[in-house]
Amino acid sequence: MAAVAVVAHNEGYCRMVLGLPARPAPLQEKEIHRAFRARSKRLHPDKRPQGADASAEWTELLEARDFLIDRAVAARTRDRELLWFKAGSARF
Image (cartoon, rainbow, N blue to C red; front, top):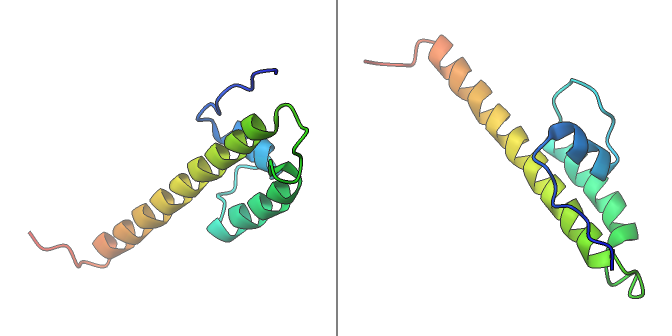
């Protein structure tokens, strides 16, 4: 069985794993989930029981999705906090 490297925490690589375009624009969670569902239908180990690398590729897909979702949520939270601060809601 050939070993598949664990997903490097690199947004470009994770986009490639999920089949998303390599563009500088931020991703929405909806886009990430849509791409994950499309790829998971082909890469799920239950769909390819004879595939030698099925579980390794599935793990890589899961890690790429989790990494991109975490970044999207962090960006959204950061943007909300910045808007809240700019609105003058910060009290010291």
